Amino acid sequence: MTTALITGATAGIGAAFARRLAAEGHNLVLVARDTARLQEQATELHDRHGIEAEVLTADLSQDEGIAAVEKRLAHRTDPVDLLVNNAGFGNKGRFLEVSMADELTMLKVHCEAVLRLTSAATGAMRERGRGGVVNVASVAAFVPRGTYGASKAWVVQFTQGAARDLAGSGVRLMALCPGFVRTEFHERAGMGTDNIPRWMWLDADKLVAAALADLARGKSLSIPDPRYKALMGVVKLAPRGLIGGVTSRTGRKYGPQ
Image (tube, rainbow, N blue to C red; front, side, top):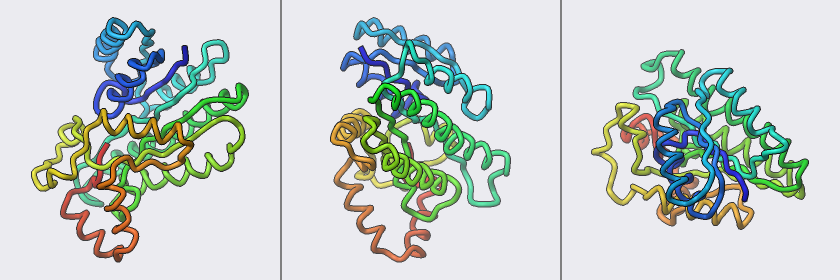
């Protein structure tokens, strides 16, 4: 059996990855901050699918939490075959309305943790000649919108660059760029969703199925829905000032996890 490690595993896209991979027979390492919720999830997935689900409590906004996950990813005798860097969050408010501490925490989780965990995972994977990494970004990476969008743009550029550097090694890397997904994300960030059109909402389970299919095809970038593929095509052609004005009206976080 192969093993997948998922950060931010207890809700939203992370939980959808856990459900899908467990159903396909993968053992799991579930990473999040809430131990009780992790244990409940692990028990449910084990009982339903007969897989082993390991719990790793870690706060990726702290060095100790990142280091704990790095150590697990670097394990040579109990290897991780697939890493899903999904942990993330949004801040409510425009630039200068959000505290510097919160902005730096976002960069810690979205950028530093992704860099360090990807490095730990791919180092071990390259030695074995196989493995995969999915770094969850967002369509916000393609629009000018605050620290969230900038951090997700970094995830996309970093992942595609690393994928090129590791080409031929047997290790695949892919940046996943979802749009608006029905998760706990907005509620946790205190963001309203009434102004988001119904057609823009995606189902987390369908999104994950499409993302894993793209990873299997060797793609380094996945925008797993025809609606968002078309929308991002428009974004590439539209003036950036216009796009920035539109995203400011939809809130600080455009295209959430």
